Image (tube, rainbow, N blue to C red; front, side, top):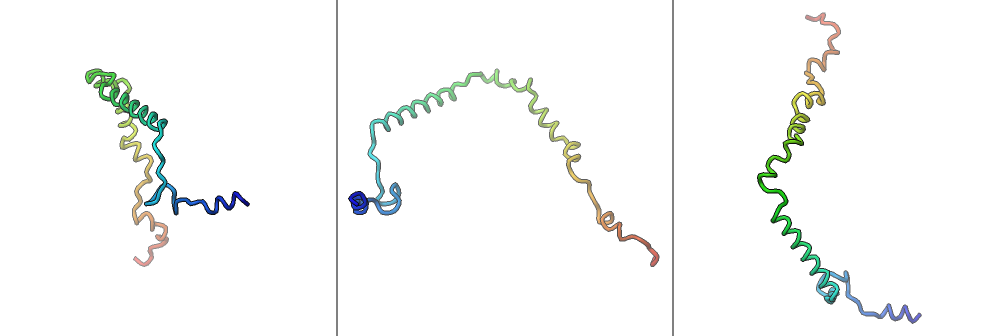
Length: 106
């Protein structure tokens, strides 16, 4: 009984708790600041690695030639292979050929 009275008369934010004009704003804690600082340091290290790549431009220019990825992709999309997957062309005459039983009226 006492718990329901406490919960019933407790003043809370109307509507959604974390949206709107009367929202609840969490106070900034020391733990949150430390985690944000660690996240920024991690992003800074990632950006440093991206700015200074492992391979030079000369080394990275021909590294995919031995894998022959481009030739495999071109072979996959050749005209013969794509045409084999498609249905053959059908004309209207071939569709209506079953109606030609007798041509006595000619």
